[in-house]
Image (cartoon, rainbow, N blue to C red; front, side, top):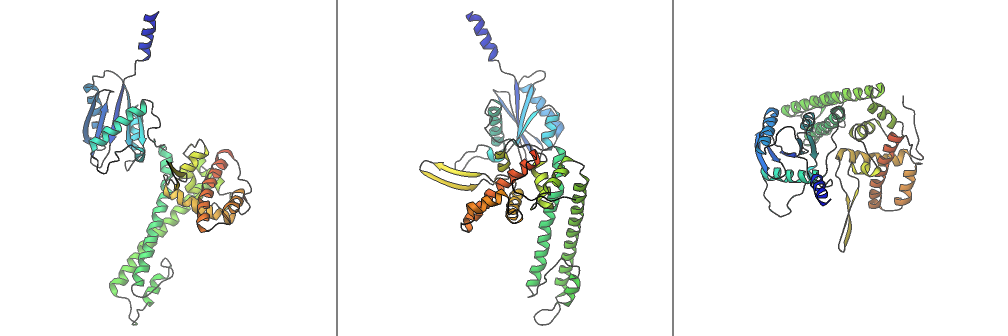
Length: 383
């Protein structure tokens, strides 16, 4: 009987052979780390060379004397390389995890050794612990599908173009201010005519080189604004078509007063169309609007919101929260804000609007996911 129990115990403790692989990515070279649970192997390869990657995996199997098929798990830090490598590894049958770099343990000494080999070793060690059962060891990124990732290009290009537009307008205004002049609308079609009529303080026309520079700057500005108009038209045509569930979600959000064309598109494409939120805490944490209390020993204080998510969505959410108070004055959320923070000072109202933004985002998620209309809101008919 005891012999049978020892045999069963031995069989239960038998571990599955796993090959662990960690990537330390860079522009020109990748550092790879392999481990079979006992020994480690590190090697370098040319960046983005998939044939060489397969060769290195085969060499690691030979080095660790692994025969036949074996389960391979891997990881790399989220960054500029995006998610194409993740999708490739999954297609090869490799269980890959894309890791949030800010959640990786680091040495807290003032000076610490920092090399690609050291970083690869740390990733490899944490990968083994993660698949050994420490599931909360680090934060794993939720990777969007290729279609969902492509759907974010339009609004992100608009965001980039808007920044370029601000830059060109500011440069034109700055060059004119240096001459003591001002134009109210540098984007206007009559800007070039106004430029000819401008005179400096002594009654002279603008210097030739300065004038030519302003003309070229204006032409670049017009190109940016024309592209923005085309993208906005394309966005509206997609929403009207309702060809995908994401476009229908955008139209559904627009039925709420206070949610406009840009905010509805950004909320859906950046959040609700691809991210499967399980609860309201995940919704509030996505844009980094969750509190971060500090409670250690005798010290207790609030450090503010985490700001761990996408800054564009967080800033947009705050703007929409202010607009919500104006366009939805009878909603439950607006009444709660004025009752709680309306009699406070400027600082308290700013703290309160962050809470409104977090609650509003949760209400929008419930509206899209479960069809629950926020209490007291005004709806409008979308054409």
